[in-house]
Image 1 (cartoon, rainbow, N blue to C red):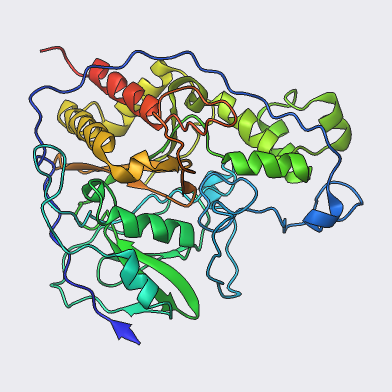
Image 2 (cartoon, rainbow, N blue to C red):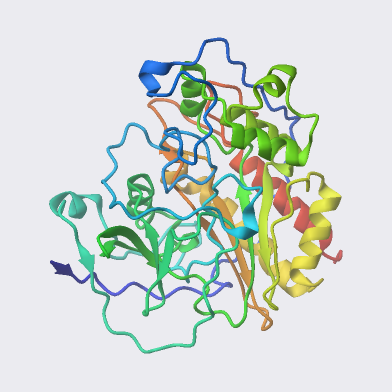
Length: 429
């Protein structure tokens, strides 16, 4: 069965949004990272785990789904019934991301298929992909995009994450292993004000009996681009994952080894005796090392024009260290830096008016920064495998410090800090 969607609207240029009165920087709030305290014994029957000690094998039943971005145990949307994938195995970590715990941060998407923004941050009318359409077509749908002229493309590159979760298409589009949580997000985003800030989505396709979400390759219109992936927010794990860790603790030897490779003194006496740590404990500890805890975002990886890749940002924690990394990323090009600053200001305004953003807990999502030597630059929101709807009537301000139960994600707190840093790097007028 083949279905051809309407031709998407062209991507607007970087200068499509102009605001005469950009927002003032928001005062930073003191932050703290609560520690996970496990007070119960490992749950064997519910978790189907061996009672003979910490998990040691290569496969872990608590492993995240392929659409999970922060590498925590459990599905990012446990209440959703995920479409069954084929038995095609997911490859291990990219060699460039040994520190990252199976993060699926994509260093290469495509241009945004977007409607043009109005002055109030809205969208001109268009033909969105709707959830109703998908509900009517529950069977597998293979999208057959309309013929388009062949254009020059930059090679697609993945700097961090699961190798093998992505494939490229000959039409300048990207295939990412199917995740229903991410699919539902894209279906809503295609008709939301945020559409210009995410990859255009074309539905589900299949290749070699494997389901994929089909989206634009954001590198397609850049010439030898520089790429940076930044994880946004004050945490990269869902509250449901903490609850699962308490109910069914599963100490992991591989997490322990990752921890001592960075800091041999980090494990507690009990963890040292077991030579294993909980995955959630590892994740919370890891976030205290980076600017996730101090600034509400962290740099995951950078790929330069010459092809060199750097994912060694696990201890990049403070503003001066972030500034140094950003200066290297843009090669001190103030025009590119200004373009990035303006784009983030535009994103902040649209996020404030987005129905999607108001109704979701955005965890483990990244901002993809792309520029080339011509001065062209763009930023897009990517990775929605852990972005879940908020239970009614809960609402978030996305800036308040997180405390278990309030579900605050710190996304806008991180964005405020990012804009302030870029502003401080620009020469004064």
